Structures are given as structure tokens and as C-alpha cells.
Length: 253
Ligand code: PEP
Image 1: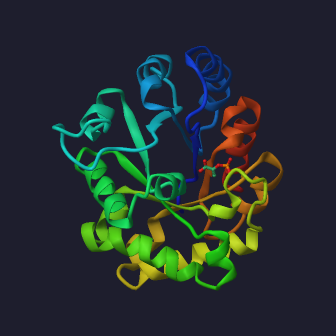
Image 2: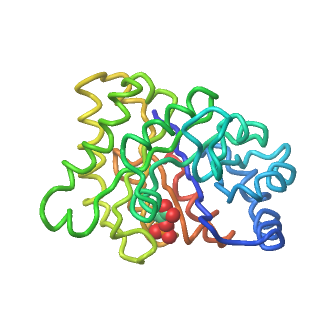
């Protein structure tokens, strides 16, 4: 039985004051959810204040990207060792906004993934196709290429210490979520591709769905057999909505 996980992605949003209020509203509810892992990924500059505010909480902290090198001459980058100092347990790598706005290749994403693993931070590897790619029938080819870059560099066993998030680009921040069936089909494909290399890794991998997850669609998505939780953008900026999504991920008893 895979443990459900919900990861909030605040993107480049908030301010010191807004984030303090958001965590204050989230923490009590998050602390009562014992059967779902919950994490919020803050902008780098707020990690320090978040780690202080979350001391002793079940609510875990993550970052939104990580440098692919150890500390050195890499202006603008933040290393995994630095994230660790602020208690980051997770880090998002390969978000479509990084791939599309900043030209991050699958090879670079794989190197960022490796860097997180070297320091014991759990990478949340994002995969997903654009609308054009979906319409042309190349969804599986796109996610294969993105996944294979990590498998080639780090090996299948690395996924035992990682999370994969399928995020169709056309569903991110658009309000057009994939249907539960559309998401399940791609999740099953990803799990099957990993199963060719290791059934054990495929069966234990936490596979999240991201793309306009909200309280009103979360139940249907999370009920799918290969969807183990969500990567949540917009709804993670509203404490009540985020907690409702987290509660929807609870396993049915
Ligand atoms: C995201 O930020 O990865 C995301 C899926 O955003 P949203 O939930 O707003 O679509």
C-alpha cells in the first residue's frame, strides 16, 4: 500500500506576511492528518521563516528547484546542501515552467534530480506533455523521454527515494484538469515503463497527479489506482482548499 502524498507548490507567489498567515492557517489542520504526507514548497527566500514556523509540525517543507552542482561558481543557483540546512525534505525538479520558460532540458533536470538525491532530499520529478503534444498523440513519447533521462543517469533504484508527478502542461493553472481517466491512463503507462526495469520499484513509487487539482475534483482523481496524491499549485495558496485536497487523499478504510 503506497502512502498518499500531497505537495503544495506556491510558485513565485506570496510575501513574508502572506506566507506566515497561510502557514498559520494550514498547520493545525495539517497536523491532524496522520495518514497522508503533506509538504509545501516555498520560494527559496522564505524557506528560513517557513522552517522556523513549521518546527515540530507534520507539515513538511520543500523547495521548487535545486542546483545541479555542489556549492561553487554558479551564480543564482541554490545547492541541495543549502536546502538541507533549512529542513527541506522534498524538492520539485523539472516543473514544466522550468522546462518551458527557462529551457531546462531533461538532461539538466536529471542532474538536478541526482543532486537532490546525493543529499537525501526527495526529488519530485515532474513529467508532462503540452496540449500540442497531446493532440498529436505523443503524450507517452514525451513522458518517456523525460523519465528515461533520469533512469539513464541515476538508475531505476533511484526512484525508491523519489516521487514522480505527472502534470499535463495544458492542465497547470488553467482550470482544465485532466479527467480522472485521462490521468490514470498516463499514470499506468509511467508505472508500466518502470515495471519493465523493476516491479518492486514500480509498485512502491508514489505517483502524483498535478494540474488544477481542487477540492471538487480531488476525490475522483485520488480514487484512481495509480494516482497516489497530488502536486497542487493554485489551491495550495488557500489553506482551506489545500487541507480539503489533503483530506481527499486519505486512504479509504
Ligand atoms: C503546479 O503548480 O504544479 C500546478 C499543478 O498548478 P495548478 O494546481 O494551479 O494547476
